[in-house]
Image 1 (tube, rainbow, N blue to C red):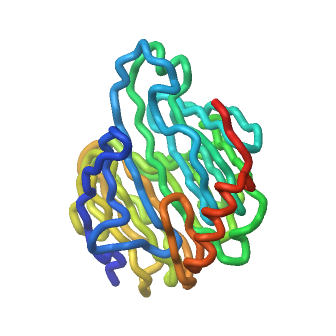
Image 2 (image 1 turned 30 degrees about the vertical axis):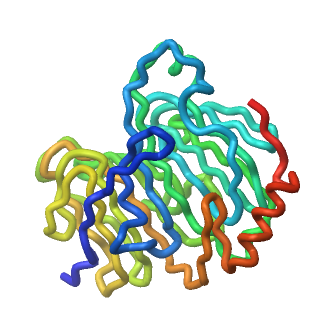
Length: 286
């Protein structure tokens, strides 16, 4: 077997606005993988008796990529300058194409902030091809109820984006990808994950233990998948494990990013900053 697992990386623990999160990507040894730019894993027990505006991330802009959030526990409220005000609960996904510019906020629902409880999310950033960076922004929610889910030899699979097992996610994207959440509580359960030969990607373990093409991986670690002759990665459960899979075709375009903007040149980023300050990305008042 031609092993597709290039390396296994420990996530870094970083402070983001007072919230401690796990960040496997970017990493000092790995800036990005194909179209995938960033992964942030946040798990926190909210104390309750808070206003939602006291928790999470307030209004901020984006341009040129898609920030996507999978909700594993709790609920997340999305508001944006398009007028959207929407809550996605555990098992669902918030997919936003920032396009030519949008302002949004990401906070726990009012109910979760007031009552308290566990909030666990992963946000990852997907680069948008140059041809679509200035498209109109859009918000694509995917609740648990409409997420395609099935079982395969002891593994539970929830398809976020792309095609798998003859099924197609309703989430539309500008680049060939397959994104899914996988979990198993059956030691020894094995599944082959299809990855086209010229695709790359990452597999991030939220918690638990597994092997990928025979290599051990544990919670808060990420495996990078390289192109190769083998058209699948073998995943075996060691003990109860949850995993996020991001795979896709390479995106061979220059990347210049600054804060919330991901473009191809420094001039494009400078223009994004000007446009934001000129109010061209709209307004969001909570």
